[in-house]
Image (cartoon, rainbow, N blue to C red; front, side):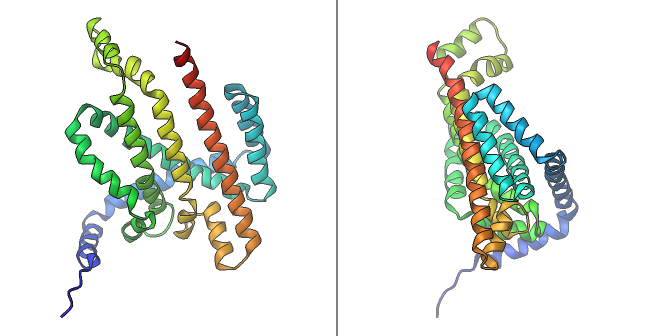
Length: 281
């Protein structure tokens, strides 16, 4: 007699129960998340492509230097020349929403964990599991609850992006100098002022590193998003794979690389720009 353990036999009834009893709640979440993504993608696609390209290059030039401006111009221009502008903006919108939600979840939890060692110890194995389990595994329950589309892709991306942001947030706030906090307490500053005026500026370099990692991991999920009908560059990679169209898959893959390099360099430049004044001080 062979013993077989099937997690699905235990999880499937639970998911069915959630669908029966909380369907309006899940439907509301789906509509809010999907509406946010569609709204951002529509806003990015409404102006002509050259307006977005020049605006992004100009802003990067003014804030981060001419090299970042030229990089933005070439990276976005490359996506346009590959005839994948719509898909690129869909991917940027998807990643932007995923990163925003990941940050909104990870930063408060990271601050709380930095103040409560027991909470950090309990979160650590959970984060280890979240980073170890293959991300497409999370799609199974997400698709069963939210069906195909952008929402399950966003959920899997968030699960993949939260751990590095949360870990580095905890590390950043644990590394804030105690004498600065004590100085703020000594002059009678309330906790909110100490958090916003002392702790956040001191932790910002490490927080920017966490944001960089969160962005890149979220962007790495775009192919997975294409598998569940979220559109964007991932859908083009999937289409090229299923149809054996090497040209399409290669163009979409290079466009993903261009966007990844652009976002990585922009976040690194922001980190270095933030770090230099503190070093001089």
